[in-house]
Image (tube, rainbow, N blue to C red; front, side, top):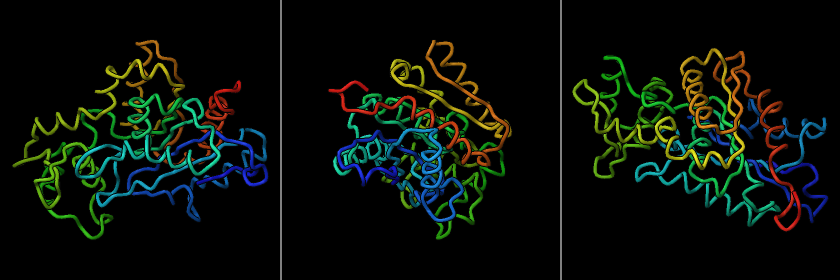
Length: 299
């Protein structure tokens, strides 16, 4: 957690809160640990000194699981992470820290898997968060994280036990396993406790349908009125080809519905410019949109 420089010296002041969600195979240390590429305390302190942003509290939960990540979803296998972020975490932070405890003063952002979480939780919980910034969201199209070559399908089917070290498993298989655990859970199917989207070298349409139901590109039409309640921004690097295509489609859908938002494709890959994007785009976005005072006062 990041507390702004004046938090201790001014015991009566309250602050808006940005919840920043980390990516797959990462933890909160990817933003707060020593040597982190996007080190939130360093970036936020510098932005505050430069006068480019207004003070805010920044919180990152640890959403690591035995599958390499939670996908910030709700299911019997990986747990109810959506409720944890939108209800339990927010309630705890509001109770234990001097927050502006109102929807208009809470923002949600994330990168990659965290971007998916911000998109999913944001569109489903406009009563909790008022502003969303999505960086290079993974997992938003029906084909995301689905093995689609004979080699990948064979490797996925060969994955029958949780390894001691997930870093030895190919990334495409790790993300597919985590997606199946999150979106096709089956507590009666040990040892992995999910239904596989692949069987005998072929995709299983019934399992794919369950997974697809959790993709933002499949969900967006059902939650379009919720999205109208948010301030929304999202971006992606032009070298992040598949994700750029998916977010371009998301941009098209929001535009077709007349939902106000901003979308930028910048020069970069999946993660090489996240620190500067966080400093120069994300923090100013929330500085502009998050309310600064309790509801009884004008923001």
